[in-house]
Image (cartoon, rainbow, N blue to C red; front, side, top):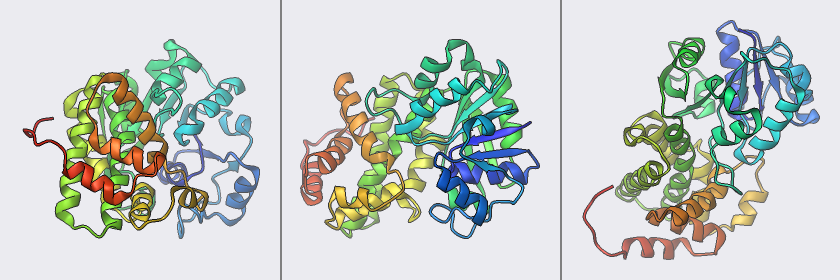
Length: 335
């Protein structure tokens, strides 16, 4: 199967390398010509995957028509802020058939609308294409996958047939793939965990211990589950790889950009200084606002998200954030 990976960030580049290792023909598309030229020349994505070589026979291009031509599988690995724009470019290019399979690696929701990537995709490509659309999520620290460290992920979508095709296509002895039909839950778990990971990073920046962090992550999972179920997800999805699995990895790993962002906030750095000083997209920063709004609309209690939102957008101090959470009315432990 001929594959095209749209997006040359850490996970997109990793997936292109992964598919190449499986012997599949793959092209890699970068949005900016200078980035595409640099990757094609140096064969190293130094910003995202230092020390990992992109095989010389993987074409790297910024021409989206060239990248898509002949593709039977199109993998979209774009930050959520640009997902709609890039999907519109893919649709306009027209280099796909009614049998082309699409797989989204995007872990985020559209900030302005609060829509999942699947909902944005359906708006652009039409309802009839949704049997050919799936999402992948889980503990997906790109550098670890590129290094061949064993991990697992889950792919979710509407068509069991196409899920099984993707499972066989992507699975290896180092990257185990599960499938399920709860695409809503998988997307929410994969995006919402970024918000909780920022809170976990704030704990690190304030030099708290593992008791604090474990408590916060556990209660964060409760928030994810509450809002996810309200939005149509299946509860047990959040006990799986795209829920607790991704949440643990993102909240505890030094490779996690969201956790690191939170740690710097906890140390007293300003939001604007952190965001302006990195080329990486901090999905949790915008998603904290998206999930905050969604929770308010749905009437769902999300206290950790409320505090993260206020730290990022209302200049609440991290220390006050902690006091607000710890001083809440006592309650029974329920989801």
